[in-house]
Image 1 (spheres, rainbow, N blue to C red):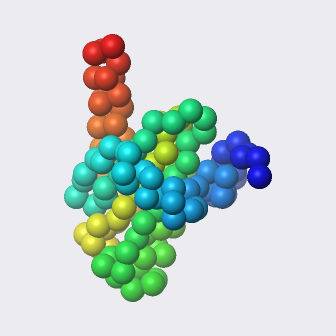
Image 2: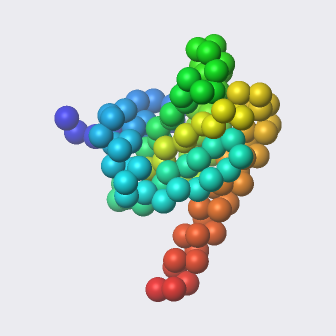
Length: 130
């Protein structure tokens, strides 16, 4: 099956399947080969790739019951759809930590921004070494 381009419909901030990591093997590969960035609410696993950015979400039962987990996933998908341009040519898995259950949307937004800045900074450091 040919891969389609990751296009986000900005009218409803949806994150289509073409932009998501869906297979278990993709998550495991990223866990083995990717770089981890830790925050208070999230851990990001990032792998530089050729092509479109793809994203995965992991929200375990440690975060809370189903309504809480679903709320966290909806908020993260919205934040990703708003900030996708920051992580071009990368696959990213967002792993929610239990503290995210009590976080507000703004707290999640700032956490993701901080981690994205850390990723950009590390990428710039690697470029300077070359």
